[in-house]
Image (tube, rainbow, N blue to C red; front, top):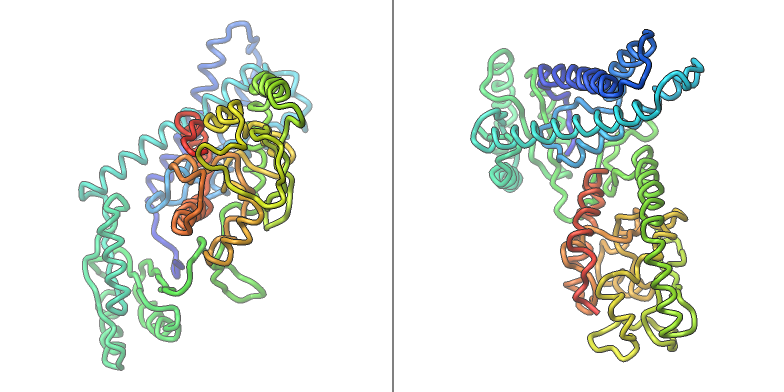
Length: 458
């Protein structure tokens, strides 16, 4: 979907959220200062830092698109942008304190508590407001009226999507079917003149196959006289889009067909998430891993870890680590474990059922070769097999493989001896890649804690 003209925004909401972010930062900072009487805040230094810090957050947020319209954006994406803006604001404030050589003048405990409280308050209010707006739109209020123009099949597709997502807040109030002749364009010219200053719709949506680019361009020249948002929804029925966006290359606009949001600063943010949370989890599970290592060595002998090469980001090879769960055997060809597999030891069966055999992959995460959340890495010969049977299979490798993933927490794990079953798993993996956000990662990690460890598969 390409936006051909700037969309109208709810300026009052944007201004309110800027004021809220600044106000909540100031209020939380003052409350934290009041709750810590041991801090000497007689000078104006604390007040100055509170004011400056409260203004930096909305300023940084504006640069990062935090105050763009919420309609059509997922909650996880919005919260992810807020967290990124929060981190950037902390970075700017830290640089300011270092530059002015005043880092020793402020309580680190106060700054830490204040920062976390601002993040929590901002996230909670955004979640509540987002939920309220979804409910409001689903009940028929706060709607945007849409006029659709295009070919019958494309208009039908748009109508089905709008009716299936009432919480998005769009309602189709009219349509013009393109008959493909000159008379239609003449009627559009008259329509544009009639709606130049007064109209009953907020946006115009164009639904055409991508091959009708010339038709869309001609139509746009006629509709340019209507001062409203115009969106083009190209129909690419023969192409599986792995997310997509309009980019400019060498002065030309291009439709990037397999774009993932995990690029640039977002990839850095995810790497930061992996390092920080990975280090915390590694420290927490170190006693457990030590006990498992001793148990594996005592009950099975031989090596404690199972090491195997897998395909990672961009298909590059890396060595993955797991606790050994099987008797030593010839591993020339990968054979998936099955129920009552004689190779699996009693301890190994327990480790597999509880997913504790995966814990050494925390080291892979700290190495930067895996992520906490992402598509699970498959055996290399399985990749060689399925890439020839599932067209979009290798798109899983556009991101780092993960210890847990959207497919796994939805029950798609274990034995995959059916192409259809693997296709479902790949669809879940691509859904994650297309809609990645920091909030989505945290949701999957939370789901892993509640139902992702217990594995009924062998």
